[in-house]
Image 1 (cartoon, one colour):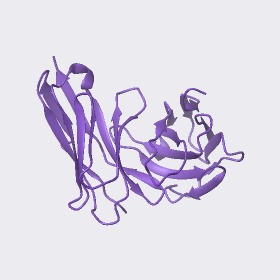
Image 2 (cartoon, helix red, strand yellow):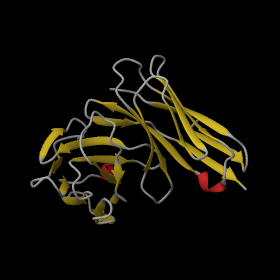
Image 3 (cartoon, chains in turn cyan, yellow):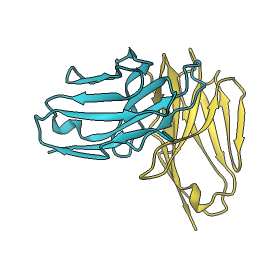
Length: 116
Length: 110
């Protein structure tokens, strides 16, 4: 697609429910990142994929959070047993290829998650 | 945990004023630094990618410099316009991911 697409745009859920957030990167982009952004703060790294391989998941807060990118394109971030503290904007970003950090990131519009 | 700091946290300037703000980071093991512009309700958009000490990048009225030895980058906006109002984020490469600073929120008053 023309840009990074995320869905849903907004998600309201009850505490304890599982949610799945989807990211469709720019076609051909190899690298895919998930970030979480609290109101008024910069993005906080969650996890990173190169193709389908999850290279770094050190930013995932706990084992309720997981991510996959099975075919090296679309990625899903899953949060199990959601808690109110999980409420945030979840942003996906992609870049063409890993080149030592010189490739700029293209961000999606994000999914605003609210856990009641 | 890598700490990327930005100052000031927020800034209000009059249209036509020039302004600058700072991104500070640990000077050891530097690889790359990015600047992003983020307008409310939109996605962050890349401004500059900087890799070498002494790098200077320019895009219209916006420019940036990099000092990796002392661990800072400056972003300059010349002749600020209301459309420059946004949050400016810097991001430091750490491993294979990027650590973002908290941003500087710029408001340009007409």
